[in-house]
Length: 191
Image (cartoon, rainbow, N blue to C red; front, side, top):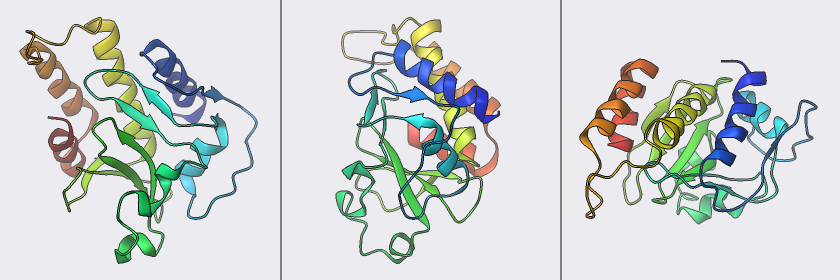
């Protein structure tokens, strides 16, 4: 998927989800980005999305929080990662979290910026996409599945048990969007 379609779709998705906070806009003219360790697809992402504060996508299943370039959420100390070598050397750059406070980050040593997630309290990285654009494309599809296809009705009962058919549709979406380690990682991270 190309930049001109993906990022405007992400902005639309933000507004038709149930946004909790923040405003976000797509801009065709690149914005100047002053930050260390941002390159490749992550740099393009920050150059073409204008948002001053963190943006909370309010869907129930996979609530996503996108960190603005100046967000404290991007700081290693916010996650207790400042003393880990692979983080200190700048290889990984945090750009989001889910609403369960699981950190989502890119490997900026690769131009495509593969995406990983780390479940709170865990020590293992789960691959969530071979590129930032793969991850964002999947996130858009997942939010649309919940909000448009299921109209937010994903629970089967008052105990918040998720409908089996929704989980099956999420699994199908994962299988059609990813392969290998990314498929395995997204499955562990979400399900």
